[in-house]
Amino acid sequence: MTGVQTCALPIWNATWGCALVTGAGSGIGRAVAMRLATSGANVAALDLRFEGGARNALEAAAAHGGGRAVASEVDVTDAPTVRGAGARAVDEIARASCWARW
View 1: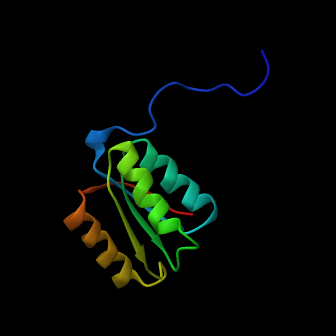
View 2: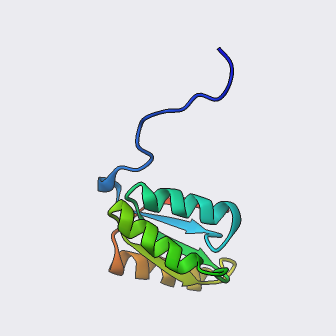
């Protein structure tokens, strides 16, 4: 058997809380955040800037998947700012269960 095999298991379990995704404004980070959001995850998306309609698309994807999304423009090299964004995610969504860094 050749080719790509897929798995029917869900990517996210709703009881896991919130996924924090850095680099979520574009590229792979955005794709990860969108995939988590459409799977029902609560997503805290962090990036220096969000390109085009990335913020609105993420929020819409989370709503469609049954989760919530918070997008914050932060410099991930500034630890206090990242801690603040994490605290905001906990306040607005749920405890952080996973951190995806891109």
